Image 1: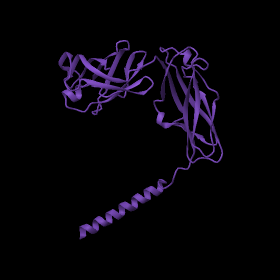
Image 2: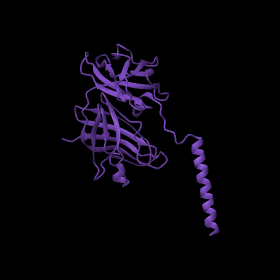
Image 3: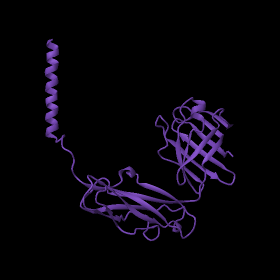
Image 4: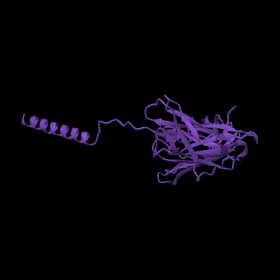
Length: 283
């Protein structure tokens, strides 16, 4: 009984102390400020958008979202946006802005900043980046953390890689766990896991159903890791975010030859797995 009473006293003391700390730190107060910012879901890495260039006169329209963080207002909020000097995209060459202001209408908390992309002027070898900054807002503060956005404009060739592919391992490397190779095979097919599928998720961007190309499920009885890559004029680059369920990063690169429906990809992870696969599109 004494022990129970002692625990009760200690519990009451701790609850009182916590309540005191919360009161002193204004824990119970609700933030009632109002800020404008670029859509936080696109940050900190910014926005990368691919456009397929069809002719020299082509233009495309992009919309970059600006948010009002706080309650919708009874009057419009006007936001001023300017291109930062660090931009490699040139106004009138790579893009144009119809206006450097955007208005969040009364009663709403979202507006779109239109950017006209001069796709016909851009070569696939160029990498123009448009760095935009919110410089002021009439009726709200400018966010300190989300006032800048990098919009990466990329031009690619037509791409049509969606489909199912047969997998042939030109070279297969099984890792030793430290980045080295324990076993190697050539011209090898993994029984029961000899196909993968590619699905388009954005212009020139594809998701692989298994970026180990049958190795994980077929040789390790493990989960097939999915991954993505970008096709820029038949040069394939794996996404930096490609990782398996153990958080092991995958390095991936390759080329495609649309004429014969083949893709060749070389990949590796830090365990030592990897190799070169030849993918042949199925009818």
